[in-house]
Image (cartoon, rainbow, N blue to C red; front, top):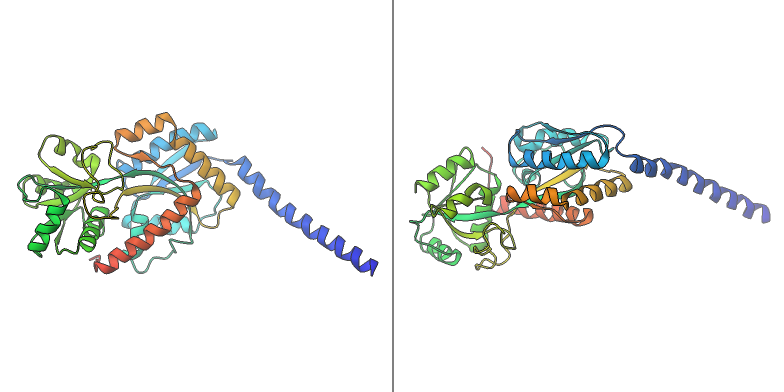
Length: 329
């Protein structure tokens, strides 16, 4: 009996030693990161908001990590082409992706994606959020959100709203508004937000959702009227404009946001290190100042909070796309 007890004890000790030996490289890997230059891939063309945010953050991270952090643009198919590539890469932290809300919208639009958005990526941090704003031409009769809902209900199918294109964030903001308000409005897709904005300013369409930075000076000049912002709190750039939630459409939220991801199944120690480092950089005075100039608010969520947020956003937008019967031509 004593021999059996001794054998079991030696076996347990050996198993513990194997586990500790296996865990040691992971801990050392997280502690030593990075061991080479880090690449942040933006799956959109250079010069856009995502690209600008990535380059500002990359400079600060490079100084923190003591290694170059390089931004690389690999555009295509609303970010799905590089997302598929990232999903197959090793989760060593040296290749990351900074992308926009498209990441949680795409699964509802594209039925044959070769990756699982929930499991093939490690959400690290919400980098920034930029509220959209519902703007109308000054000649349009409704001057408040409640008046717009009443007007649309009295004129079903006769109110048009423009967007940068089918399936984009500003289009889906409009679809969410329709569903929550119970109104019928007609979507008019354009090839880019600039073209839609031109027609809105000219009075060819009465309304659209657009980013606050994109329409701020038109609001300030009186060329457009802001009815409400799409975030749950007011925009510092438009402190006198109510949120759509407080203006009467309770629970409405359709903020454009930008997130940093790694490949899935990343070691938790490395994941937590990257998330913590990024979060601290985002709260620096330098980044806050640079982001504010873009009308963006740096993210402050923990990694766990961001992962839950991504999951909830994915569920929300897939449902909106399905309920609104949005199709990509």
